[in-house]
Image (cartoon, rainbow, N blue to C red):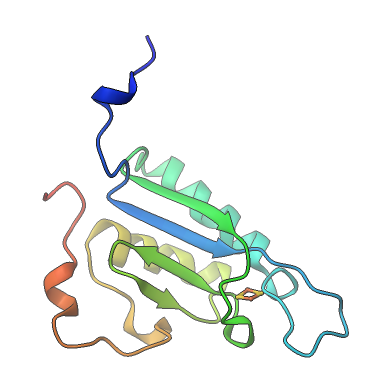
Length: 128
Ligand code: FES
């Protein structure tokens, strides 16, 4: 039986991951995340969310341009608004396990260093 809207949790996900899949012509000086391997990054996020049975608490999906193109593949995780740069498929397991599951952002991949108070906003999933 389908869950009705009133029964759904809100917000529906504990963590929501956006992976930029924007494409530009090859001669565009900003480049794009798709040409830097965003498809494989997105696929690995989706694989792990399935394998680890993280649905429906965590959702990973493609997004349009996040406007940090030079630092792509760009990934952002909400609700913490932690932005990751130059993400490669081999980085995804660490982001999933450390950040999405345990609530500890992966510092070496962050676009911006953690700000004071950031650590208070992150927590393991299921610990609401
Ligand atoms: S192309 Fe990915 S952030 Fe712009």
